[in-house]
Length: 384
Ligand code: FAD
Ligand code: UDP
Image (cartoon, rainbow, N blue to C red; front, side, top):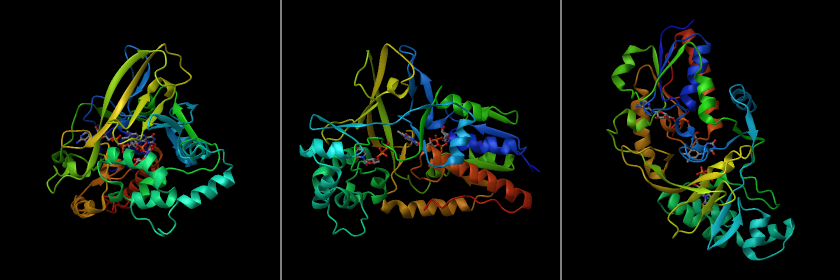
């Protein structure tokens, strides 16, 4: 039986899924959302001039191998088939991404078969690096110096603001390397776009009699005592007013442009050269290819270091930040009746499907602990 009212801070996927699951179990849930809209960084809206569905905080493509998560989101929206096919501009030439047989043949000016391309990359890749720690090591071991310098070095420096030798190897493991012509950016079996955008999807998750959502309403710590339990999906360091210091995030700036017709012929084009100031250009009508629009809107994307007051987009997670993160985790563990979840609450680089999986698991754990009156965990996963 529910034992009291629940506060949820943030109406992104994390907050919305926990809210829905707790409401389904009979809890009364109040959501506090600082922005004037739901769906967090996945927010979509219609551009007034072109009627194109815009991904307000950068491109979001839903992809997953988690059957339960796929079934879950499909309860709240239909999905249109969508395959993310990204192009890359290097020294004024256009290449296929992620690195595949087409990229290799384009880059080296060859006509190699899969077996020949594999043999070529074997001669380029530095396999003496047995256990790569940094992004740079991983890239050198993965594809060797020429492809690393062309596709990863400049882009990564612009995106993260530090040399790839300071970033963790895991980051590159997000990207496949293929010896065929498959240019699907993702390997997951399910990929698609919610027909009416992510904000409609999240709105449907939140559409429950026991859920009340307050927009443009920031949550402060003194409200914790008014609730049986609080789920916090904002930045972990922000909860403590950055009192121990600021964890490193990257923030993004988007420069909007409108035109007639088709600007670049694809949704996402990455610009890998260090001397091009933007990281990528996204043209949003190509994210909804089932809709026809005459006008177009596209965004040049620039990355820079987060300062308090900016929107935190990407947790950087430098090895040197682990100590500060550990201190915040210890502080958070001392908070009674507060759980920290989501991309910001746990300071991790999470895709939407993982966010939803963790929110479902957190809600289930909460409900079972509440029945046995055990103290709730502050973290349902270890952020360190
Ligand atoms: P958020 O969406 O950040 O929501 C947190 C909410 O909490 C925000 O709305 C914020 O306003 C609110 N909040 C914070 N503090 C307070 C407070 N004190 N009071 C009230 N409200 C507060 N994932 C994919 O699967 N595919 C993609 O293609 C993809 N592309 C991405 C592209 C970019 C540029 C970025 C940055 C992320 C991308 N992601 C993608 C990841 C995806 O955005 C996240 O997985 C998802 O947004 C995490 O949801 P969340 O609810 O944890 O956090
Ligand atoms: N990356 C790169 N060049 C590219 C694309 C990606 O160097 O053209 C690197 C970059 O460091 C990026 C990481 O690979 O942060 C992961 O790429 P992904 O496309 O998953 O980034 P996201 O879409 O999350 O921004």
